Amino acid sequence: MSLHFGSQDEGAAWAAGLPWELLCSPEEKFLALDQGISIVRYLDGPWPPEPPPLPSPVRILIVRAEPEDLPSLELEDEETALRRVLNQAAPNALDVEKLSRPTRDQLRERLALTSNGPFHIVHFLGHGAVDVRSGQGVLYLENEDGTSEGLDGQALHNLFPSIQGPGLVVLNACETATSPGGSMGSVATSLVAAGIPAVVAMQFSVLDQSATRFGKALYTELASGAGLDSSVMAGRKAMGDKESMEWANPALFLRLRDGRIWKAEENLSKYPRIGPGVRQRVQAALHEAEDLEIVASQGKAPKTADSAVEQELRFDELRTTRSLFIAHKGDS
Image (cartoon, rainbow, N blue to C red; front, side):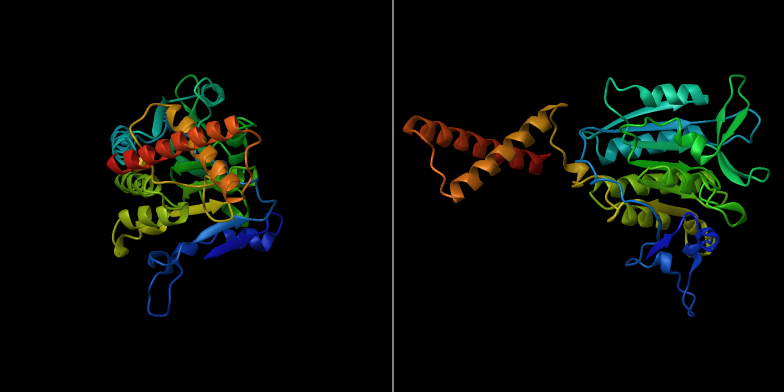
């Protein structure tokens, strides 16, 4: 179920803040728990460009904030469980890094480091809340002295690179999907309005154990090649039974037409066990082989006999490469 909201419409802002995940039939069957229904919030605005090809590896930054003046959370256990499921789901396709207890400047600097390429997914573990004074949702980072600093969605977005920002931001923090006072002021909506293609956030307070179960199921599904909407559904169902109501907490915000972060999402768990860079070269060879097949099917003959021989040899080489690659994927 796609929900489209105008960012400048007060009525739409009020509607966007409703917990649509609790919508149910007269028989009290919750639509959000129906396997065939995904609830997705879209903000009006220009669609972003075509999603990029699937990167290799997919780089994930886990950001863990634990300000000393806020209640303690079991973030060590949550991070350990998250890293374990990422390593199990797609050990050959992911590059996972973490940043602990950052200030806003430290987070900006880490996101700007491009020696290994940009981060494609940023996953926050920590506290969120609604600031009643500003009417904005905030995510808490830390000051130099370890106390909390609340950043609204726009301030948080300003920390991301203006070019090659993440395709997905996951906010496993309380109330980061909450829009107070009938506004578009949640952290999630502000990030999407500012240009982040996809944000997953929590509408209410969330238990540590539920947040952990959600993250594990979310990434397991994503690694299998599922779309983001069905991956959120899997995470929702993993959070607890119907009576717990924890499943209604996650909310998905998109600026993507079909819920795909990348142009062609593949099953990451089936990646061949080959080093960084090799996969791109093999894929380039496969594309070249496809181009040669097109040329051959169109009957375009080479200009000379020598070039015809060279083309046929190259075609055989690429055909063999493709066969070996496909066989290797099947064995991995």
